[in-house]
Image (cartoon, rainbow, N blue to C red; front, side, top):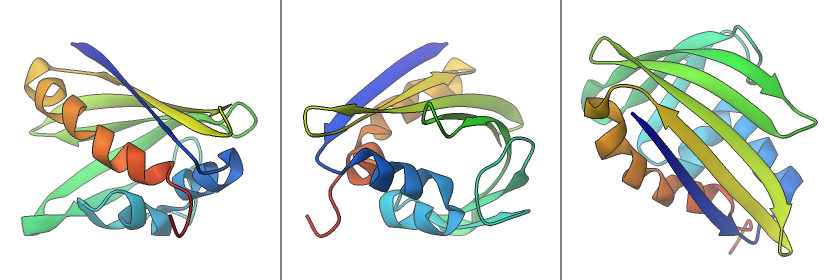
Length: 130
C-alpha cells in the first residue's frame, strides 16, 4: 500500500532539514519517539539503529538514501516483522517549508500510520519558538 502526506509550515528549509538530519532532534518534532540509538549522530546512507517509543516499543531501522542538496532521504523501519519504507522530502514553499512523506508497505502498517504522520510533520516545519 502507498500513501503520501504533505504539510506546510513557516520554518525555513535549513531549520527543518537540520531537524531531520540529527537523531537527537527527532523527539522534539516527533513526540512518539523517546530517543534514537544509531551508529552516528546524523542520518547517512547505510546507517542502522533503533527508534525507541513509549511502552518499550523498539523499532529497528536502516537509512536507505540521503540527498542533502535535494533535501530528501529515505529509510526502512521494521514493525511487526514487516518493512515500512518512508521517503521524506522538504521543499521551500510560500516563505516556509513543505514537508512530504511517501509511505510504502503492508496496509496493516501504512493505513493507521499515514494519517498520524501529519502531526509530527507539522511540528517539523513549525518555526522555532512558534
